[in-house]
Image (cartoon, rainbow, N blue to C red; front, side, top):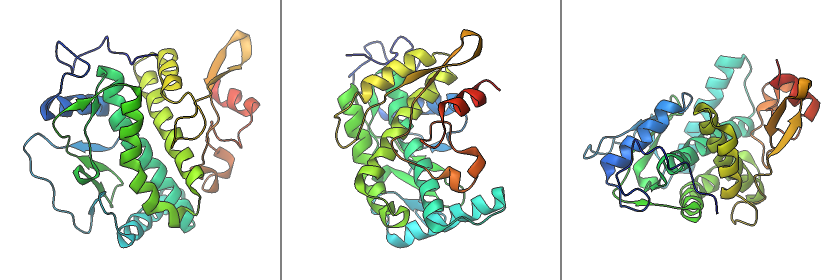
Length: 271
């Protein structure tokens, strides 16, 4: 069984693994992930800092109401229109926001695990969504887990309520929703590895996390190599779910989208 890249323990204690990290060490590990992953918009609360008061702009993930989801989706639609000059349909805005939340949340678990071998204890009650930006605020709890099964279980427990809350808006069944969650768990590990200059290792790790038959996540990582020009190769995979980016920019479907053929993937990778 492949283990994460535990050789780098800048956020870890001397014993590593299941040593029971306190909230200060968990927060340090999470901050390092945020520092490495430039597109991850997360505010990490310091230990002992009181939880923010949910309001119009800040919504708690725990018990996210239908009204709260409507506020979040409307804000995402406004951001998409401002950036792309066209108003998306409701299910498109909901899918784009859900993809962002799943990717961010999964990386908050998988990132520290990849770096230190520990899975932070993060519950829905310790996570808030900023409706204005789509960013997250989290407050890690005491203690840590470790190992691939614990990582999958922690991510599934956290994102399950999000999938349920967004399901009426994205108009997809459970398998498709959990396919999105699987994609974002994998892509976060892959992205972190690229940022660290160790893509090949990260792909092996991601493949071990979701080798297949790991419910509730459907399918497997299924990374493969594309053969480009001059003997070059490029790792890729095809997503299990869809974030509907193509509905906003039809000419620029995600590079791992089922709609994007291998020839187009190679062309874009070698630009």
